[in-house]
Image (cartoon, rainbow, N blue to C red; front, side):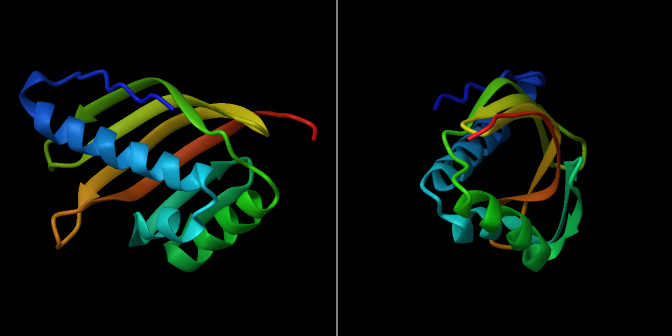
Length: 135
């Protein structure tokens, strides 16, 4: 699992490295089947759009998406062609292609922002499943 940030805003190097590290931790938790850590990485009111499955708002709904997916055997997640950019509001956007043992797709936008404890969390997550592999 390699996640190398493409730094698109030179002045935001530190924030981009922090978000790249937070994203690597999310991927590692996912690959270990640790749904609790994955869901806790989202802000309490985060929104996730998973095309074509739907839109999910808040921890309970996001957990309801990820938990059965991981329990069904999803794993070996890897991000490719990662792009990171810092926004004027201090948030960082991540986009990438992804692959795993059950499919592949595109992350259009993950918006990471710091919470009140100064921890990077997912505020918005929009991805699409482009391919599904048979078991």
